[in-house]
Image 1 (tube, rainbow, N blue to C red):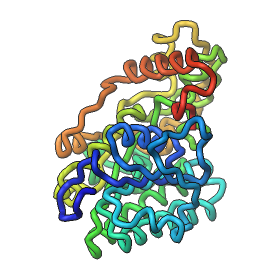
Image 2 (image 1 turned 90 degrees about the vertical axis):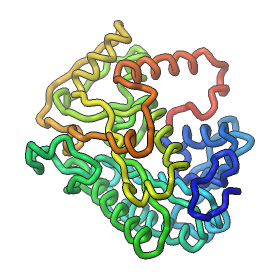
Image 3 (image 1 turned 30 degrees about the vertical axis):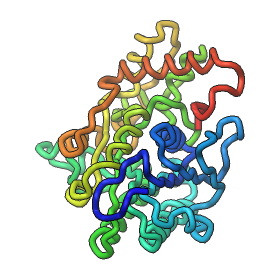
Image 4 (image 1 turned 45 degrees about the horizontal axis):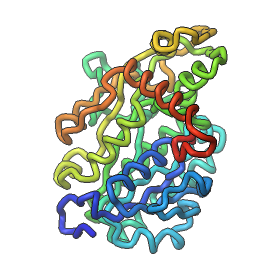
Amino acid sequence: MAEHTGGAPVLQAARVVVTGAGGVIGSLLVRRLAQLGAAVTAVDLHSPDPVQQLPSVDYIAADVMDVGSLRPHLDRADIVYHLAYLMGEEANADPVGAARINTLGGTQIFQACLEARAGRVLMASSISVYGTQSDYQPHNLPLNDTAPQFGARGIPVYAAGKVYLEKVAGHYRNQHGLLIGGLRPGAVIGRGRSTGRAKTVANIVSAAASGQTVRLDNGKAAFQAIHVDDVVGAFLALATVDPATLYQAPFLNLAGDYATVRSYCDDVARVLPDARFEIADGESDELFGSSPFVMDDGIHRMVGFERRHRSLNQAIRAEVDELARVRAMPENAAGPVAHA
């Protein structure tokens, strides 16, 4: 086990807990951590199908509010990734549930990590902490890691929860010395999803590859997209970065590449020439009601992280190749690459 002496843990020897381990980011992160030799405890409300479970991973079915069940696993963990969250549109539809899971649940995880003397806590925030483009002066764009946080207008309950948890994280860091930070990803692509407004974008490639006609009513809405592989890669980089970096810049943008829904579909059609789309422009210029002009130089400059997928075209091709690989595999052999 890595010693909690202020240094960065070595993943091969680390005890790691991942909440929200069944999600798009969490399931891939669990797999990568296990491949690197970490001792991983994967926490989610639902256990994955047995055929998708990795033999070296300890799977725990638990609610993030059930701190009593989680506490033994958090005790002196080297790294805790907190990814459990009620997503955008679901949070809008159930503000009470969002408050329970996203804000109170996250705060209880931080408190439990403090009491359990966890080494570092890394959470998934979001570029939805930023407001619409009209909230900022033109000279402030693109937005950097320290830009004012007005919250995305299209998903206000979700965005408010992210702003809140970043503030609470700062409290635990500044008042209690808990080493805590995280990433603000853009719209995560590379794997389909069933929840959140980001599913509008996340499911385009899989739907087009299956031969469906993809119908969209928000073609002119702009966003920034980042491949899930790169989100996981950045989270792994934060796991071993010098603690001084996390104290200096605890939350770093990972916004990705700019596109509109229509231009993204055009990119998909270049990779999948038989793809069929029916697209109406819609009313909104921003997919989430959040500025699509966010820069993420901090994660590169301060952490040394470099994206694997350097363009949307590369990201789309990678997803198409992965879909083809999964289709070619025997039934039930694909493991945790199944869509969360």
